Image (cartoon, rainbow, N blue to C red; front, side, top):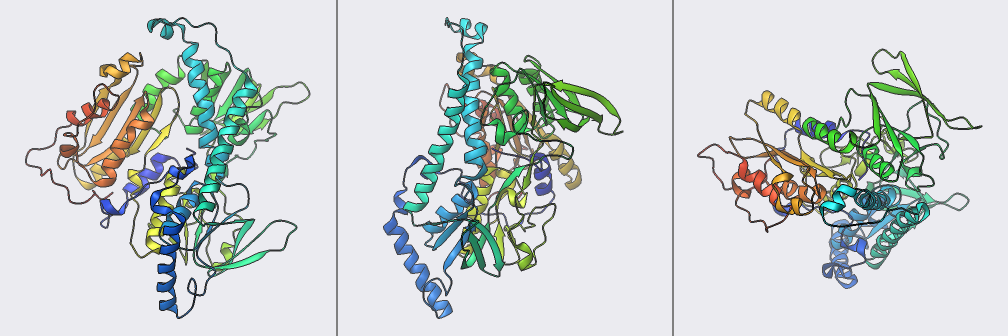
Length: 554
């Protein structure tokens, strides 16, 4: 789940400020993460025979339209530049629709998520979760368990993360090959309208034509000026995921998703952590109430201290026996505050779009701070851009959903993705998840548009399954409109919050209102009853209809 040059809250605010009168209908919305193909499974609906049949239909229609053979005189119906999760999702959906599809990748299949983000980080977090539980003597005794002192093998932990990334990368590659996606190795560059050149250094370039082009080149870690990266003592998440060392004391610059997850890993493995945050509070992208509770659960009891309202103006790597030096200045006055001396520093200040060298100038597309400016249909000029490169919502599953939406449009079905329905999660212990607006965003929007906002909350301490696990710390809150029952946002901190959020995100996507979803039945005893109680606690004005024919517009 990597995150964020633009915070989720900022993205949500941007979406909230726009009108969506043409919100998609339930049948038109599809979501995709790594999909079943990532596990090496093949959908019965997308066998090579089925794909070939669909492709022949599309080719025939194209030939009839253009008076030419094949894909309307083009080498491909669709060429995708970038084989990360977004490009992969778009490619698989395209072949399902019968489009002749190629994907160009200059590095390795899987992109940031699989190789340097979501996937390996979850492997490290799985280890940190086990270590944290095994070392919690009070927790184990409360369950009647006696466990000897727990330890770990750093290299074996690193190998676990690397092996998982390799497995998922291989599965993604094989899934595309099996379904007939052409994987073209090399750096892709747009050389003209519907023309792409690709190739490797030292080898001749190849040029292909495509009826449609999707840019899905993703992002790279953003490193502010004044910070010197050596990859050993001062590094980004790309380096940290290799777990080449576990420093005694590490500073983490940035307290967003990336920083918070790595603080969970490092403290579980024995490190002391210092956060350096430019804003006045930790976790600025989260709902303030959730952030406050998260600080009490995830920060205060652990070996973590923090400096807020400061910039790391200069960071010098350790060398010649000297520690890493971090010069802190006041974020407002720019006056020097102090200098930290630590063993290592992780730079977790967000991500920047990877769009240089794409040849966008050849089709008169000008980036904005590196992002490709697209409309609500992910389109600019005569091509499309999805994922981190467009900056709308820098999450892997958002990129995949955007890719699927684009393919639907290419196939003639208008499809606009409601970004407020896309969930996000932080895989700490316990987890944090969210979808939609934060409470301040919802109240600001309500003040502008003239309606009331209500908030309901439930505690994990009242949930039987959470208590059985002795994991009662946590809160779920929902922001909604009492006059219509529209769900504006849901935020969860607690056991398996990342899994629980999807009932709420799907409700927002499908336009299900509180007065309808409160009648849904949840198995007992399960953690899902946290949301069941949340929905039942909501009070909707009497006389409001409970029938919903289409999703609520964002």
